[in-house]
Image 1 (tube, rainbow over the protein chains, first blue to last red):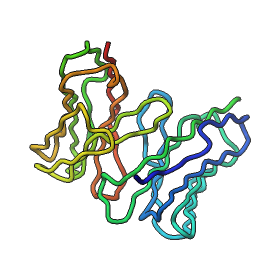
Image 2: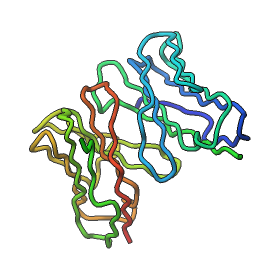
Image 3: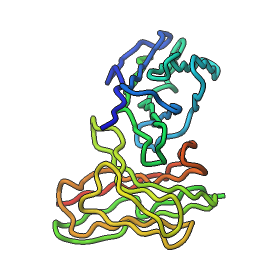
Length: 113
Length: 112
């Protein structure tokens, strides 16, 4: 079946360092969504990317969608302790409905003050 | 506007017991779904619905049953609980089949 691979599984950084998580799909995606889950919380939507090569920014967060629409990345500049949590990507495949929203396994970010 | 409401927040069951996890949304979303989250496994889709009266299976449907009699409610039934169903369960809704998901706060279920 379709899979979205996300790496790394864990990332430990010192506060102020940058952080990047990557998602890859073997087949072309219709769009990709990113979510953040704080410890003990529920996933919260961050952004959706739809267009090939799209780049979107939210303050210190930069999201990219690859030209082939098979990969995506989330980059956080100068991490803060408030960035702690697990970041998930979720790919939507062409021809699918909500049943075709496939989540990556997430990257758990810890930030040492 | 409450969003997606899940009850209960915590539940302990004994093997073989049945129960229903409740999920309700007040955003008039057509699409609703249930996920389970286990350590290192991410979010796995159990069942989903594209509208009242329509449900379909996700990646891990065995041992679970759903129905969608109204737009607002999408309960998840565990027919005969097993320890392998110990997990955190999230209900989610969306305005479209490709739109952002709004998650409930989750139900932490332990089966002993």
